[in-house]
Every structure is written in structure tokens, then in C-alpha cells.
Image (cartoon, rainbow, N blue to C red; front, side):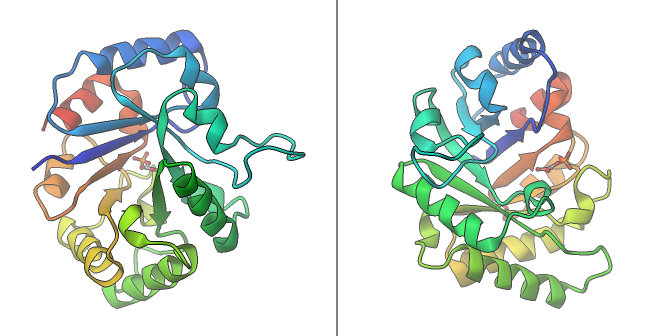
Length: 228
Ligand code: PGA
């Protein structure tokens, strides 16, 4: 089955030339999967790809006196079709559920597809019941008055992000099923320390795809992951 694999480059790479090299390497890979590259805003108009582009955050208003913010109509001009919202790295900078909710609404109003991240605040020792309760609270708040069928949600236990530690694929599948059955989300992804060695474990489960950080910056590794 076709999966969706989202690259979250975060605040990388340092130079446009490196971004171009990275995208050129990924462009060459043949894949049946849907690949979305969420690059830093400044690189969007400058990288050439037939892959789908996305952004890592977005502001909820279209224009106005909001110093430093970037809006949906601005990024749409550069073919960004997806927007990550509520990543734990942003939540830890103080982003609230109310702000995340407003951002998802703006993304949908602009006919882009939101990728909502949940899992901030979790610990590796949490029981599965605790995890489901926590995810439920986040989804209720973040998707308030939003049609969940239009929203992709990535389960990213915060302790697994960038640490090399992963939850069991069975657990990630259980959370994905919970999000699809109980909240009717469009797609349920897993993210956190995925790489070419472990991505198959998740993609072979009833999980719709992956949100990939560090490994998306290593072209050979990422190529293996999207080819699967
Ligand atoms: P990681 O990041 O793959 O580097 O753990 C995932 C993410 O933060 O989306």
C-alpha cells in the first residue's frame, strides 16, 4: 500500500547549496510512496523538485502586523501543499493548543493539508493507557471544531525524537488505529528516530507513513526509506 513519508528538515541544512544537493539526491529515487519535503521557508522557492513540498510551521493570519510570521498564501505561491503543525519542538517553545488549533484552521482554509504532531509531554515509561489518554486530550484540544478527516496526525512520542530510541511498532500501530477509529483522522503516521533499519518495522504495520527528521538529511539513508 502507498505510504506517506514526510521529511522534516528542521533548521537544516545550513546552506542553499547543501539543500540543493539533498533535494537532487532525493529527486532521483523511484518510489511508489508519497514523499513530502518540509524544508525551511527560505529554501522553498529555490529548490527544484517534482516531490511535494511542505512547511514546518505556519501562522494563522494571512497578512498584517505580525513581525516574523509567514502565512499560508505566502507559502502556497511556492507550491507548499502540506504544513506540519504542533511539532513538539514548537510546543516546547511555548506553542499552545489554541494556537495549534488556529493554525490548522488556517491551513485548511488555504487548501493545504495539515500534519498535526501529538506526543509532546510523553515519557518512555508511560503505560499504553496513559499514552492514549494523553493523545486523546491533545487531539480534542487541537482539533476543536475541525473536521479530523482532513487532518493527518503524526504520533511522535517526545522521548523518541532525535534520541535513537523507538517505541515498539505494535504500540505505534495501536496509537495509529486509536487515532483513526476514535478521531477519524485522515491518516495516522509515526515519527521519532526512524531510519533505514527500522522504518520497515513501522511501514509493515497498519500505520499510514512516517515523519522523518534526522534520517531525511542523509540522502542514501532517506532513499532507502522511501523506496521500501
Ligand atoms: P527524528 O525526528 O526522526 O530525528 O527523531 C522526527 C521529528 O521530529 O519529526
